[in-house]
Length: 109
Image (cartoon, rainbow, N blue to C red):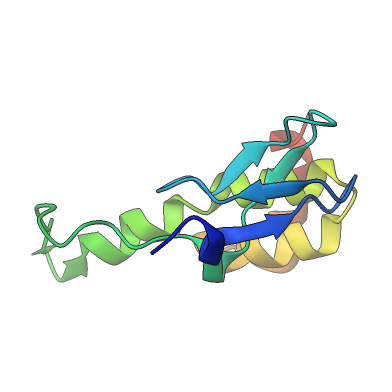
């Protein structure tokens, strides 16, 4: 995927940014804001990466992949988007919304 196809604008200042490989968030070089990289712009890991497979009936690849989105939820909370952050954290962890909201507030401190 070319750098241009992964380009987007900082939601805080509008500066051009380019999604970094394998990173859910990045700092804007203009305003220093932590920005969650839009999900559709994140690149997939190279196919030569070893797969974790499954263990005890759990899909370890899916579990690890979800955890990679925790920094995105924290960044959303720090931007004041607590509801959106709690929904994402709930999706990641399986917590109900109220517990996810308490957790995300603590994580965003």
